Amino acid sequence: MREPAPLVSRRAVLVGGLGLVLGAACGCSSGGGSRSGGAASASPGSPTAPAASGAGSPTATTSGSASASAPQGTATLPTATPWRPGPGEVQPDVKLRAVELIEALGTWGPGGQGLEAARGRVAALGLPPQLADQAGPLLPAADEAVVEVIDAQYGGILSDSASVLVVCRQWSAAGSTVTAGGTTVDVRLTAASPRWNVTALHPADPGPAAAKLPTLAARVLAQPRIVLPPAAVADLRSGMVHDSVLQAMLTLAGPYSFQVSVVRSGHPLDVFGTDRPSDHPLGRAFDTWQIDGHAVVDPATPHDLVDGFMRAAAAAGSYNVGGPRQLSGGTTSNQFFTDDTHHDHVHAGFSS
Image (cartoon, rainbow, N blue to C red; front, side, top):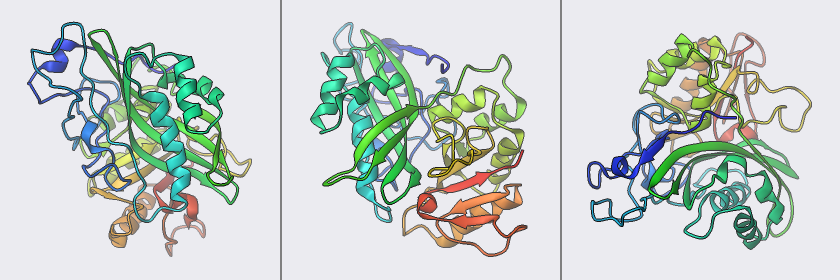
């Protein structure tokens, strides 16, 4: 179970007029909801929420007027721009299929709460309604909810199957109380026509917070140049992320500011399409989807920026660095690698 998200009163939500600041921010740059910019209109940045880390998060806009005249007993939720794939994507409709499902599951208005309503939203997408039964934290007991997808990256992409890691934050309202949270969902798909089918959902399960936050984890969470999504924040708070990963993040935060997509939970247990255990669930890897404000997948992102980050990750101790291009050199013959799965992020794995 993840650490419970904090409850924010309506009074707190309305503080500052239109300057709404809700929790669970992991920051994504503005820009129309594409992969290169994220869903910009609901990017709150409260340092008090358990899902918040890093800087650069724009202030959220709201679905209604955030003023003292709002109806008594109601809550105002942010408005999230739907995520859409940008240029440079491999099989963009595969990602879109996964994202549309997560957005539909985790977003509803008054009267849309509950499992049966969620099944109806899934069926409306032409997908098996029982997928709603696997939604886990995306279906809190709430009158209304909204999901914002931060990033969608491949956990694996083959000719006939795929894993799409949908990284999101969510706000839910029960009466006058808004709860800020979020998760990462490993969405499994198989090839079909005219669109791929979704076969299973695996929401992140970071586990409970450690009784005492490890020192390096606390330093990463306090570092404004490292932006973490909700599930990754919970991973660090669990105490189950290796020091090698945390120290490498801190080292990279010297020359770079970057946004992490996945650390431990929400990632496939095995390297997709194989029976080899992945370093992620062991707490020995992290993925980066944005560097210095540029999405790794965006063709307009300077190659030198991404390649330099990959080499810096290797210098920081990663034995296994994947990205959109094959780099030369390395301390071993396979320290750097590339494939379709890693065209949209930089993977840094550690041996211990």
